[in-house]
Length: 137
Image 1 (tube, one colour):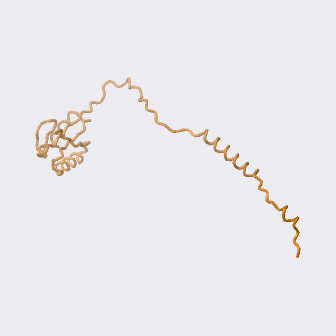
Image 2 (spheres, helix red, strand yellow):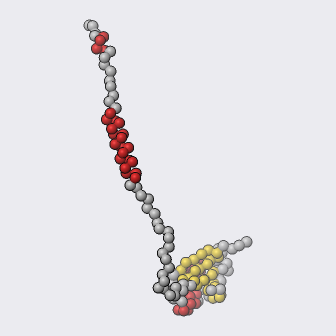
């Protein structure tokens, strides 16, 4: 049982790199071409020019409602009862219909007072926003 020594030395595997290089170059070209067409979306922050036809700008005033630490309620710095706030706001809105209500609440005020006022005003279609008052010490 003799083996041939001459056949054993000639078996060597060759790896052909040409197809792999072709694929790499095709992918490179694909990514270069697609990357050049990407455009970032942005928002134009330049405000529009003022309207010259509008003579009187709308008079949007704010009705200021305050609730202090001891649950006293003020409408435009005039003390009133929480039950009378809707009447006071309605009277002011009769003169200035586009006005909104800003409620400023102290940290120690009862939450029930604030919720009552917000519910009453929103039930009557009055726009309301509120702010927490930070006392300076």
